[in-house]
Image (cartoon, rainbow, N blue to C red; front, side, top):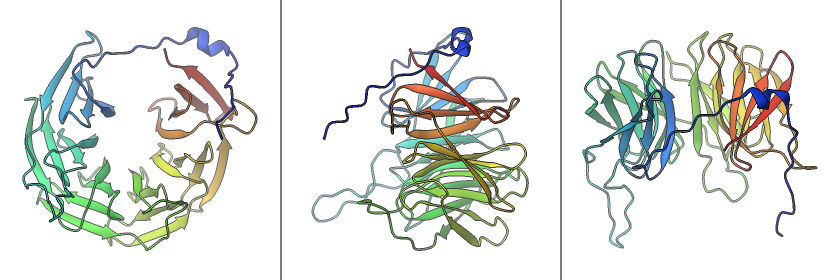
Length: 312
């Protein structure tokens, strides 16, 4: 039946002091993940369907678009004409390496792309070996190792840029929830304390980690339904979005000490759908985007309080 909710949000004093800046990306089809470079201060994002790196100067508002080269290997097509791998890269996520190069997950060509911001050019691609499918989210450790989820093949990938070696780590078998056909390994992040590589399985209601030395996998039932993306703060606490429940989880991994924070209802029995989150590098506050009401949320741990900011 149609949803009859009529969202209402309180006006908060902090809203009157906030200023929101938006930047038009006129030549982009589907802008996806975005990161701010700590080296040059520019915003870098990928065009999911336009196959490009987008570099935005937030002082001038102007953007540069650098098209990606074609994949190293052609698409795979069966006798029925079904293409299981795209002729295009389809970049999804990006992260800056210790070498100050950007690494992208090219989801539809099953490759990892490398972009040099100094020359504003694509310099390399790494083929992710069979049976890997759909490189999704990427994070890079302090040692320069590139880690990424493989949403289509129930795996985590490991790339050593020094040697070019790509390894695949199979995740434990787990039944998908609901009508999903797979568990979809989604978010990934690396502990700031012990270097363990944590991941979330969106449709498996599971989180777990890969030991970076032994590649052994340890997995847990997720404390939230629909764990989507996750991030570590400076103290080594792990924060996870519960996309299905409208909550975020705060986890101390050593003891698996867990607190679940319910996001504010915008109508009785209706909460937001938190997609991704990030930790402010100075305040350590948690910033969350959600996909139901065009709002960005800010969680202040010291006050156990959510603030909601409407997008223009």
